[in-house]
Image (cartoon, rainbow, N blue to C red; front, side, top):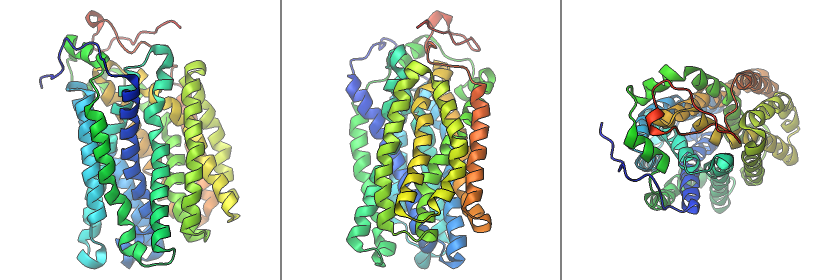
Length: 451
């Protein structure tokens, strides 16, 4: 495939504030679409799409469809990573945004099982796969957009912009569902009939805003220089597995805990609090808005300080805290008070944020320019499969059989796994993300810049 990047375009006049807005807006929209699915899976999908299964089995089935997207993420990372490394970051990011927007609006229009029968959950799964493909290609491109523009000593800070997307998206998701819930009433059938669809349909407006912002951004100068002078002798995906398989697998394992805590907090706890603890939807969604603030603060703190302390140290610290944090989570929230639920939800998101903040710079710094989009995206997607794809589904099963404490042990296990993987990772904050064109060869060592 021929490249479409102008070889002369090795510098950019795009202001950094536009880069920040483009990277943050995109991930916010993508994760908003992802989160409203998780919230709907917790609150309404068991009744709308799996009514014949009953409450418990319907909840497991709903979270199984939630997990489907994580299985699709590596495929999305491979597909969009290929084009991102071949034709550029900008065009690929526009494609992921469009795919996510179309799939999300389609879910909002999808009739339930009472209307079209078994076709409803089948189409739901297909649209969920499309969401997974989009997110698999989105995150790496957004972080590359920030880090490839950033100076070496501020890459952690610049990578914060796309990393704020999930916290902003969680706040938007909780806030949108809260407004709908307040409008139609806590016990009204209108929420099940049509109210839950409003957040999905509202995504169309956000996508239009995101597209407007992204078309105004130029291709990153780093990619333009690499595209002009060097082309890998293998494809991006083969290049990653051939030259950096160790980094790929260790990075995926090091972030598995982050995803497990994240989706237990943002998806499963919503179901647990309403169905098991008996808290109202209004209370749960309102507390989610407040917890999102703490999540954003933890992400910003960890991203900024990773430029001083190192990415690896921040992730290790998060993994260490996650082990006792997972064990105390459910004994805490099982007291069934709003304050305890808020404390538990905040704990999960803060632990996740401390890992997530530096991850925006860590993964791009680990891989070479010619397959960086693919490598960072694939590592992130595999971590999502390990942690996010399994944790909410296993949690529903574990809670039904052994109670909430079993979920805590599962989370602690993810903490141990990620701690071991991170221990074997190298620090990346002083790595050069680019070689002179005439020195770039397949399999070459990534150089290190002095501080």
